[in-house]
Image (cartoon, rainbow, N blue to C red; front, side, top):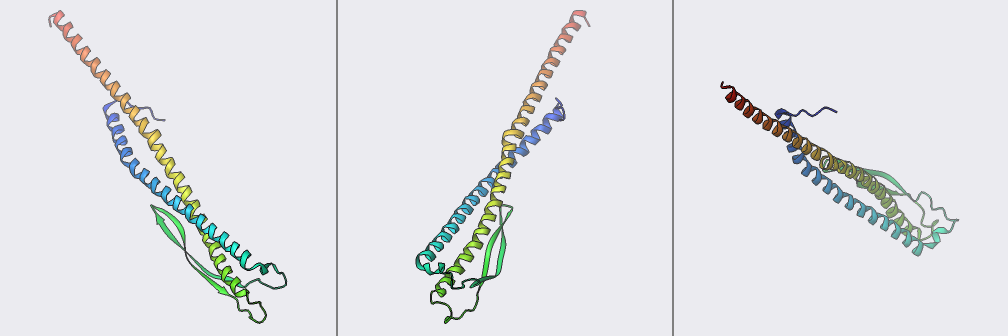
Length: 200
């Protein structure tokens, strides 16, 4: 660690640093608050998606109990053909956003499958889309949580370490310069009195 120089140049440098830190801190804190608000929104969105998944499960178990009947092949009724995931910029942080989900219903004979399979297909489509949304919501939340943590660390670094340390350095330099100035004045007076005594 560099030793602090106790002179006017060092005082000027430390004062400039303090000014920069104080200018940067409010914008950093604002970014932190915005990210925290987005994280709260992301968490609410994830909870909503998870609630919808649970409601979908509940509806299938209540209205389609025959799904548990093993003799009817219900595999591969619905498939995901394409997923479009975009990106959204939130105060400089890139997060994913689910733009579009394309689902394909596999053809099946209405004579070979029971009538309730149509209702099941609707619920399967909904569930697949909700599951994809849940994955994107979780990824989004993970990124936002990491960003909030990083920005909070920066805010704490400025607020609790850099600014107080720079203020202490400025105080120390000012005290030293003030003491040196007083010592110079005292020396000048003593020299003057000595010259008067010597009659110079």
